[in-house]
Length: 375
Image (cartoon, rainbow, N blue to C red):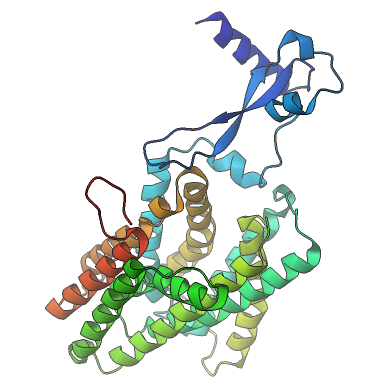
């Protein structure tokens, strides 16, 4: 072990017990093969030069390079996933997002869809209440946090209600495929409401996605009487979710994503509870092991770990690479639905899925240019 390594280990040990004047956090660049030009920064514990050991005030140039304390973290999320490998997070989020549609179907086998989604949101709300002491960062004004929470909460309530209703008639794999259209609808609404540029690649990707939807509609009669209605309700759900994302983007200024998720659950849960109480379906007196396991899986794993993992990807790689999940999760969902729920895959379903996923890929990364990056 080199003397510098021994010094760093010693500083790490000392820093755990008290903040000494010779230990500090230094900002450094992070390199990763998935990153393309946009290199984020991280803070590493390091020894300060001796001339700064006892300096109470330093120049602005030194203060930018050597800080007395690390930057404010987003609470517990930085401590939990700080050392998680990128590919571990990517595979985790892909598996969670790919298994969520089937879990939604299993959770409402023995009860109404209102009761199933209410139980899921209740578990997620309790989990975030327990995590509240570790969610320290609230840099935005309370009014802004309140507005963003309202937008996210109503978006979750409306979109999730549509998803749970439509999940009774649409195969679980196709639910994940249709939600892959979320970035396309978000881009269209952002171009209309926020004035963001809408390139030719995005237009062509949107047309491919619409073509995939038309193929699903034309071949929908072979998949059940209410299949087309379920597809239409799912599209409405995706549009509502995209509209909520645009509203959050417009009002969000440096609010922790964990606070946005917690606020959305705290706003949406009373609405779900009210809809469940007004529902004509009676509350179940008993549930099977499959439904209970699916509800707890959605409330704990999908609501908490899936979100934290995706936020970790956004903080470590570029946004374009993080959205690879929207391409891989539908493939996992189709395989899980076929293997564990005996869902049949028809030629029209395969063609429509390929068109939708291809349109999403073109929308996100554009056309591959020779000697260049996607444009």
